[in-house]
Amino acid sequence: MVIVEYGDFECPYCARAAAVLHELVDSSDGQVRQVFRHFPVFDIHPYALTAALAAEVAGAHGRFWEMHDLLFTNQDKLADKYLMAFARSLGIETDLVVGDPAQPYGDAVEADYAGGAELRVQGTPTIFIDGVRYRGRLELGPLRTAVARTGSGRSADDRDDSRRRRVPWARR
Image (cartoon, rainbow, N blue to C red; front, side, top):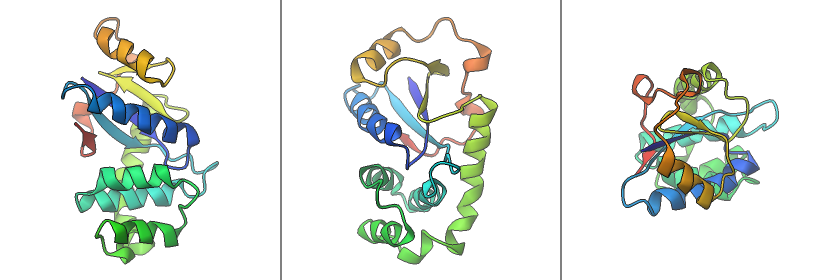
């Protein structure tokens, strides 16, 4: 079972969902895998894009989920100086996560955003469970129920086809 989240590191709803999704994955005995896709709502959240780039840089160093968790835990601290401090705490060269060195990772963020737009993602967090858009409350109970009954009634419009897009940031 794969849960795909389109998220924004500056979105308070995504921060709340992050803890719930982490618990869902951790309590699933390996049955649920979470995939994170960037959907920075940059017109509302001025630091969302730079945070997404920093997460991608961390991912290139095998530390995506650690950076993911730091960013959501410290949403009020997403300016460059904080991103550099987070990188340092993860053992990543600080200059890599901001400015020009982070720009090559923009293609990955842009690809996630474009994929979300194609699926008519309009806000964050947007969740898909095995390709089916989840429209319920982002709480552990309702998510567990949805995971248990997902598999029938899929609509082509609500599918996130993870096989045709990159899936590097999966938490098992």
